[in-house]
Length: 260
Ligand SMILES: Nc1ncnc2c1ncn2[C@@H]1O[C@H](COP(=O)(O)OP(=O)(O)OP(=O)(O)O)[C@@H](O)[C@H]1O
Figure 1: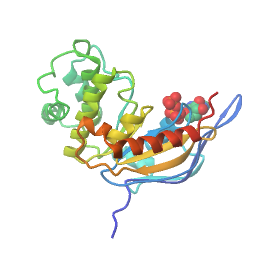
Figure 2: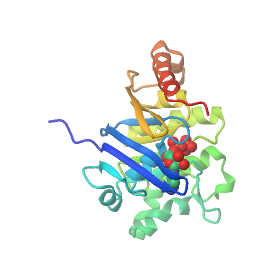
Figure 3: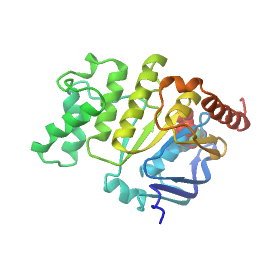
Figure 4: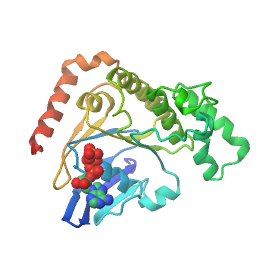
């Protein structure tokens, strides 16, 4: 028996009613994400990448179709703490140390106080920030702050990680490094990851599945299953297989692009 998908969308649609008329942020999206998938969402601005993540996270309500998360409604999944969410901005509170930032969701969720320091230490190790819990956000580089925000999203053992352009504001070398670390973290934790990006190389390097989207209305135009091995040194980006997948993503983006 094949296991139930972690995330399953069927004819999922979301239309925002605005003063300028309806905005079709998502239209008839069908998508299946299995346990342990690393799925990237790529497409031009406004194609509904963030909206899809927000629907999964129960932050927006669909106007048509259905989505299930771990076999539950998004609301039930949110209440069951099924996912951690990582935003483009690290969003750490400057007056709290890194450790206390990571502890915050655990405190809000009512975790046993005695259990929190161990959890904080464990997730800091996972993102390669062991020993940084007493530092403050401003004492860390942008890349380190983003790793701390990933640690925060991992602190309560959600098996899904929703990441909305987490490395978009970082320079390319730092981004390369974080991409490598994220793959390593994914391999060690076996999380299911949904990752929004505008970068073709980033999407191809990270993903087992690439979802290409196009706007007005926001829809899925291609779903590419990666043929790359799970072990991915950075120089795999120069291999023919990598370039072939990148080419297909680029073609998909071109087909859905309006250039306005
Ligand atoms: N709360 C809202 N009210 C009205 N329109 C919205 C709302 N949220 C999103 N939209 C619109 O829905 C469409 C999809 O937005 P979304 O943020 O999901 O796109 P995106 O692909 O993530 O874009 P970007 O790459 O710029 O982040 C856009 O046209 C956006 O303006």
